[in-house]
Length: 478
Image (cartoon, rainbow, N blue to C red; front, side, top):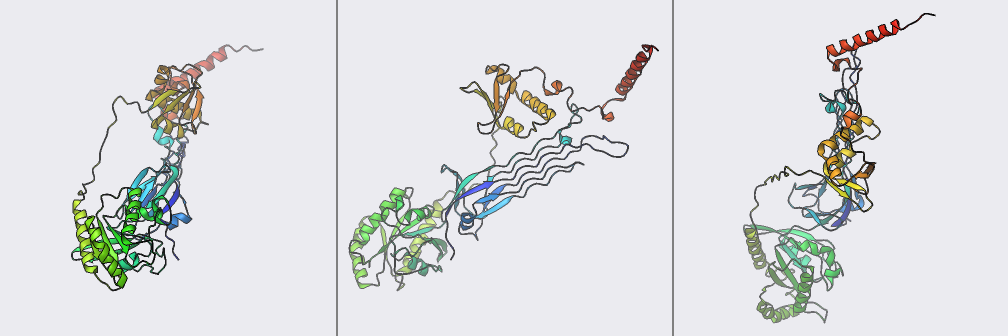
């Protein structure tokens, strides 16, 4: 039997970006033809997409760990690595995405609506892409960035126009079975309905959906019974229908007290005060049920409720109820604001915004936080001095060294770039020269004859001949 699951915790991991390639072009008569390392591929995203054919989160309950594929590394010959494939996860219509703290990240309503739950890492640049007039032959490449990973919570809130609420065995399942083509499980014991049932009803020109929510009992809003598990399915409904049992065999219950109990549970759950209500007195086919309905109807109408007496078994009063619900649904739809066309809002950063912050912590450590510095650190191969020098150049151009000086940093002070749990820490040595000068014309290799002008090569060969002649003149035979 298929199990209904409407809340799961999902562990998602996007793909890592592929590393860039450091390569030198080689061919006959031109062994060192310049850098030709390709870029790494982008890591795949994890994307949640609404699929109308999916009605439960059961698959993610059994397999909560989902990971997209990594990007491939770049190769020589200017060949870029293949991008990782996006992992598309189908979810039911009405799925809400939350973080572990309960904050709403996305509300997925409507077929095809999607949300990127984890973004793939960028691929690293190869040395061909890093080459410039000043850095003609980089001997390094950038590393690929790791993809996002984390935990999210998926909650399913049924998308329906009308919700039937009431005590267990009040006749909600029977009512939805005769109003629509839905075939829920029906029996004469409590909690027959263990999952929300949806049905489509046509009344005149209005077509609407109706949901049979599992029975509520006192304390449902605090988790008693099944109520807390399914009260969320009432949130999206435009109309609430109280289905009251007029033929209950329990001596301590009656339709008015049942209504008061359910209303109190809805009030404690919150957010449903503005929904229009209709009261349905069900099971009037039973003689005692008809008499009780006639007794309580004036009291309910005095409270302002619109009351319908129906019998799901005898199909009595269903047409009037169906059209009344259609009228309320049509009004609710007309009152909704029209959806505006999608607009792209561009918020440019201020021209004086540095894009990073420098703070001094209690232990004297200076911490640098910012998207660019942290990303550059993740892309750096710290086993390659040239790559470290390139990082120093980038940080210098961004103004990190200047800000450290303003914050009071001195030579030998500890500097950390990144968050506490994943930071690169080094001893700061202020300098006027950037990394390129410190490494001695980083990125140039004198084996590359093509990177120097012909006049410079002639001067170098002449200097070698002059030095050889001086050595010959200084030679003294035995």
